[in-house]
Length: 417
Image (cartoon, rainbow, N blue to C red; front, side):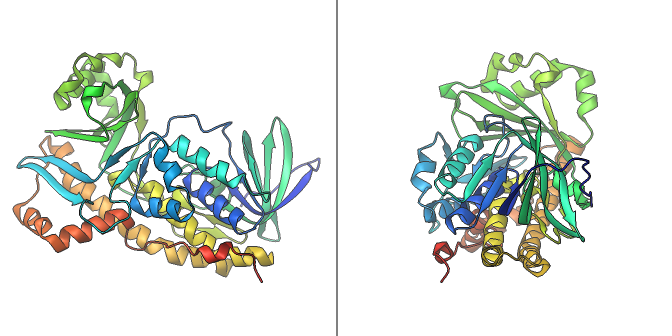
């Protein structure tokens, strides 16, 4: 692990839990700990939340959590759209394997909410507690390590370096986690047959709303309603970006018009490859999520495929499990590796199961279509099985909550006796 190396000692501050990364996992964990009376510091490298996020799908499991925190009404008051079913355009016609309508759920839909607004809401709520501190424009430079134990971090803010001591450091800084790298933890990557090109297109009120998906032979498209514009994900075969770019933007524009004819001339608003961002899709997971004094959660521990839009929700499930495992030890001021291992033992199995399903779907359905240049094909037997009510109900609950949901124990917010 990277050791602290400084010729001049920076000022030292102290907290109970230091969370690096104010994404969904970090923000939720910080709020839960703050409500439980634990001193928590949330460190974020950006100056605010006003930037482009790709993950905006908030599933019923997360909406249930927000309801328990008294934030569901405020969350749904944010500009959002709702999706209750997933439909694939296939060779044999539309195929809808997932539907939340009719299930006995408090929130039988997926809310598509701008992640920036959700993070603002969560951190604003946490700021009501005096034991919470949010450090924006703050970049962690190194881990503070003593006798093999992570004791905190050193971060810079306004060109000044500060050493923050903590009983535990939580890395919630995403799939390209700097903290993970400093801790010499390497994830294992599962193969993916696809990449995604992200860009914006103007949206008109007549377009429809929510989540739009399209598929033609060898091509696939997903469009996320952002209010004033569409966030477009053009799905291509893994490694196909350079070939597409060599063919020119006109090739991309033609594909967009073929996939979504309603766009019309708006496809021509993409005028430069600088407007297009390449996401190399991968699914990965670390064999060990912790070091003494340090725990990885969310994408830092396991990057999820975009299939199903479950990434935010699994990161938040990690945060809930982390809260349950660490709130007691943090109150006592001593977090052991056994406490950290408890989080991994709880969360890694369901995460790996979902990643296996995502990978199988990507390779067998999307991958085959992209590589062979064919429309998505769904066998008759699969269509029949999915049409059965018990199977549809099971698939709906799996989409809503996953294989191991994390109910929140609100009694832990009470002051310890």
